[in-house]
Image 1: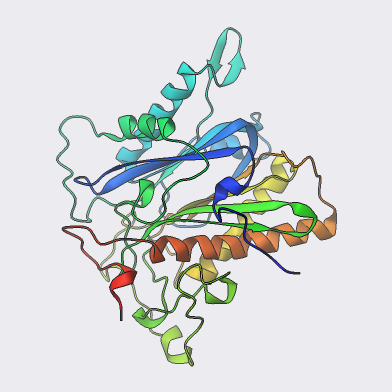
Image 2: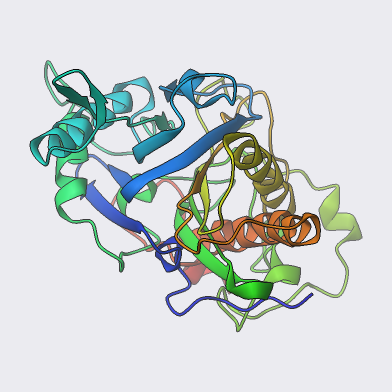
Length: 335
C-alpha cells in the first residue's frame, strides 16, 4: 500500500468541499468552516474527556438526518459555539439547508477548543464575536486556505509550543482521496521530548513538516510526558478535527471513518484523548467519486484516515507563526 499527497495537500483535495477561515489577532482566536457544495454524509466520534459541541447527536447513525451542509471548528471555548449560528445565517441567505415544509434549515454541527487563556484580549463586551467570525469564514471559503496561525488555530497551544490549524490529503488506490483538517490545541505534545522531531514523522510525505524523521532514540523521550499546564483543568485544551473522503459511504461507515482518524491523534500527539482534552473527529463523505468501497478498499481508507490525520496535526504545529504576546514559541524558533 502506497500513499501520495493530493495536489494541494489540503482537505479540499476532496472534491465537493471548500474551507474558510476568519481570525482576530487581538483576540488570538478564530473560526474555520468546511462547506459542502452538496450535503455530505456525516458522523462524529468523541474520545476526549472535555468536549464542547453543537448538533453532534443528530450525526449518530440511528438518527434521522443523513447529511450536513457545513462543519465548524472554533476557538473560544463554549462562547465559540456561536460561530455555527453565523455560518447557519450565511447559508440560509444562500437558500441552503434541510427542507422542512417551506423552510430551509442549514445543518451545521460544530466543536470548540479552549483558547481563552492564551494571552489574547477576551474583553469583548456583552456578546462574543464568534457569530460574526463564523459568518465571515463562509465568505472567505475556497479550495485554497491558510494553515498554521489561522482560523480555529489562531490561538491554539500545545505542550510548550504554539498549536495551529493543519491539513493534509492522501490519494489511495482506485483514486479515492482522503483529507484531514485539525485545529491542534492539545494538552500533550506534537514533538518528541520537547524537541523539533514530530511524533508523526513515520507518516510524513515529501518533508511536509520539516523532513527531520525520528531522532536516533526515543525511548527516554517516550516517558517524558509533557503537558501544556501541569495544573490543567478540563476544557483548557482539545484537538478538534475533520476527516473527509470522496468515497461513497453510509452514515455508519462514516462513523467508522471518524473512529479510524482518531488513530492519527494517538500517532501525532503524546498523550492524547486525556480527560483534559475534548478530542473529537467529524467525518464527511461527499460521494463525488461515485465509488462505493469493497472490503479491502475500506481497510485502505481507514488506514489512510489515521495517517492523514497524523500529518495534518504535525503540519498545523509546523506552520504556526510567532505573534506578539504569545505564551509559547512557534516550532520554527526551535534549534
